[in-house]
Length: 399
Image 1 (tube, rainbow, N blue to C red):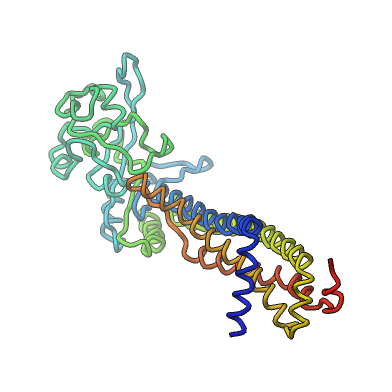
Image 2 (spheres, rainbow, N blue to C red):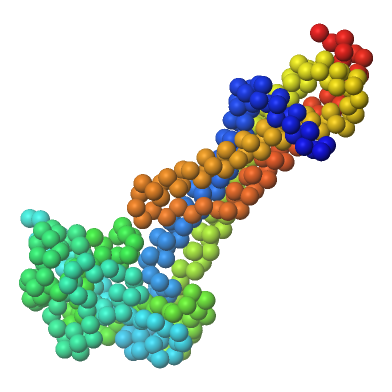
């Protein structure tokens, strides 16, 4: 009954001063909503960055020969197709493994002669590098065994040469003086903007055919994709060990994966989220100071009322709880509205943009709402305590 009465008195007081209560709640609403929105934006940014990195290749490991200019290089130091077979055989958990040979040729594109990157590779390249076939088909084992003169074009190159990816199918293309038949068009799972071996204008051909255009048995790079993310780090060490055993001592091979980049991106995201939430907490604090100021003004305006209540038997504790309840109602009410506002933005974005996934942090909702209630208690104690300590006789004389 005591708390119910305190709640009723507080509610009646807020209802009488609706505009003041609404403006006070607005500060808490903005602060609470900002905490949720900041967490949502941080999670969305993190997921986007991680998706971009993972889109380069699923559980990807890549290996290249690290040439040392101070030492004499030998053809035996370079990576070969035999190294690829050894990796497939000796590294557990391999889902896809392939090699690439990078070459260049000049071709007429859009009425101008341009340098086109020509990549010799195999069927597993699509899996390792997360490629999407836009039209036609990808390279297969038969193309490698029969040394078929077939090729795939990047989407932009197919459009420039033949105006459409589908129009490019079965068309002829001269590469290194040899006629190749276009069997498909492809694109990267995530655009690397020419920072990888694939550029906007690239051509894929079977690696067995590419060896006719390059000297020796060397390949430029190995790509390995493993089944599970947990296997990436041990598989990376195993690939490095296999390559080291197959070549002369002192040869250095750069074997890396995307796990460290993913972990670094995750750490940066967490740090950024904490910083942004702390900044949002400042908004909640400002809202709390607003509540305290309003409650202090309320105590001053209602001094005579407090005196009358004390005169008819109200205890100091009851007076304190009444004003503290008012402060908590203001903060919790603003917090609830802030939670709704913070959820409305991402949910509305999902509704209007089909397929858009915006993660909402449940923890941020709980924290924002809990902090808003805590702010009401902390900043309501001072005015509530001041009201409870008023002298009844002086309060009755107050005009």
